Image (tube, rainbow, N blue to C red; front, side, top):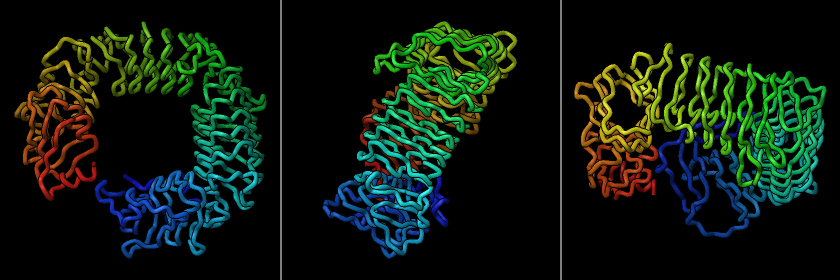
Length: 588
């Protein structure tokens, strides 16, 4: 894991920390603070949970174990309101993301070289960046210093006092998450001079109903006004050149753009680029839309353009069908993601690219035929499209397919003339059958023999595959993708001549059995002793192996990757003094 610093770290740090931390069980405690020792000094992770002192002031020490305290971890004291203020010492040079977000007040030692405090606010040493504003203070009363040019990342996070606020003149930038979670903020006015509104800047401001943007605003970041449910109308001034994905909540009923804006155009319920060749975003409006007809000028559906146009819990009349125009070429990433009620979408013959997650979780989508000119299908493009089960025809033009692009299928057929792929009903391969691209989970197979030509299996191909009883891996296989067999019940049997992999008791290992890659969820074994040769237990190796009652980890194991025993009910036995014993202590 890493000590993650704010995006604008270099604005107020001389030489910021960006260090990799060791495994989770190397964390220490002095009874007050949890910390880790690095080459640069000590990084405080947070308060020790066992500490019950109710001090009014939390003083962070300059030193722990004789070494300088140089940083605070991500969210080290996040929303810590039990103290009137937190005192930052001279030694601290780096703050992790939201390390002090939502705390009451901050005080900084006067001789700290990187930070200063003014009336409980945290600022950069030169006073130009407001990094934290007291969470219980009203900025209309408790003024922002006139030196401030940047409202920093998470500066007002979770402030419940703000209701109506005019950003002071002189501010040039509002950073990511600056007002995130200010639930009572109802009005915000952005003055001339502000050029950038960062990602998630006002995300979660549920009461926000009025936003006034000045003509100086050039960029509105991703999710900037997302989850602002009370915001029903927005006006985009002429200066705006960039609007990030899902910048506004789908609750918007009307969006308007200044006619002099050179980048965008709007028609009440949708936002386009200026010449209307790209549909940026559709807003369902107060009562939603069951059908949307895309203008004939559109060549591209932008990222997340229709995302969440089927929010059942808002009792909208959710989008059920969409008309896409002839001439449309690109459907962007996540364009229709989570449109749960979408049933019909005819894809015109002109489409060449369907992006990642484009129709993911469109549970009711049926009868979707892919055009012959289609060239690219992104990862998980049709994931969870459960109504599309059955035979699936891959057009002859397709040459790129992302991982887990298709839903659960019973059969996949490659059109005659496709130069890139072939299939044998249940399995999709590259043209020469050297790589497995997709496996149809809706089948009646018990045994799968991977062809002798196969050299590579893509990521997550057999994820959750519980119908197969046995999979034979040939001598030719060289590479198995990440999480390929997670949750797979089949016993694995590897050809003894394979130079890269081996098997034992249905489990998959690397050749010399130093890495345990996968254990089958349908194994008949109740008690399993991992071989003494194993040094590494790979990610998700025992995922959902609920049939196991006990697992013994040998002293040889020196590394256990994340989720290795996820949803495994077995009692785990370890050797005293071993890596596994330390891992168990840290895990618990």
